[in-house]
Amino acid sequence: MRILIAEDEKDLLELLQDNLSREGHDVFIAENGKVAWEIFEHEKIELCILDVMMPEMDGLKLVQKIREKSETPVIFLTARGDETDKVLGLSLGGDDYLVKPFSMAELKARVQVQARHIQKRGMEVDDSNPSLTVLSYGKLNLHLDEAVCYKNDQTIILSAKEFLLLKLFMENVGRVFTKKQIYNAVWQEEYLYDDNTVMVHLSRLRSKIEDDPKNPIYLITIRGIGYKFSVYPPVKAGEVNAQK
Image 1: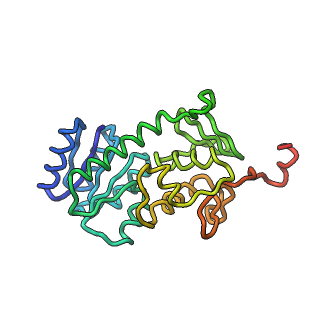
Image 2: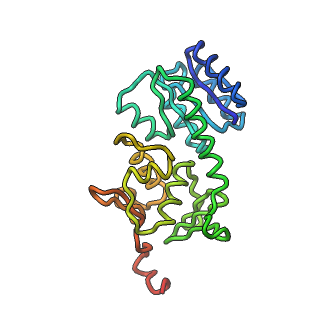
Image 3: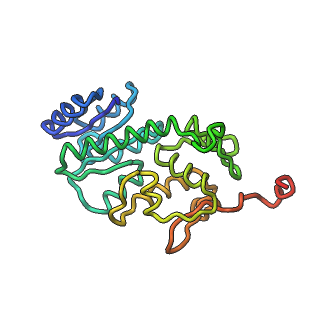
């Protein structure tokens, strides 16, 4: 992959560059957020590894600028271990989070997970019905071969995890999933503890597919259990006859 690393600790930056280059990745480096943004604008970056606390522009501001134009996966690196900081990073568009100090083996594993998600996002099809490449429900159309969602013919740009979440629910309309089941299916990792990762990503997905995310009609919360995709396609009163 073409990986951008933004980290103001020079020794750590060089260590990350050396290790990921040895794995066969094309690595771009920056010692502050401003330089990182300039690189991102001019290079086709497939994964960003960003320190949260950086001069010129911090990682949180940088991921906001990235999300204005791209859904490129972002892994945050930070010395902060506070739950609030983790949730903030994820809610702004981060895909993963590593607290310093961390092992290179763990970082490489996280990078491999993102690589698999990128590959699946571009290649996902319905294995049970290879000819089915579009899932349609209500006003949503999820194109599996393009990994793109359309609502009222308007394109909705999804991140890799948002695509996999929506695919999971649209393939199982009406089925209730627990957070553990969702995490295992989308992240493909064992769900070891109850954090906010699933909730944050579902919130981001709702903000894109719902007319009113605070009163969702597609992605419904089943209090105390989990989440499901509404069993009835949402329609307005004037559209009922047209749907029959």
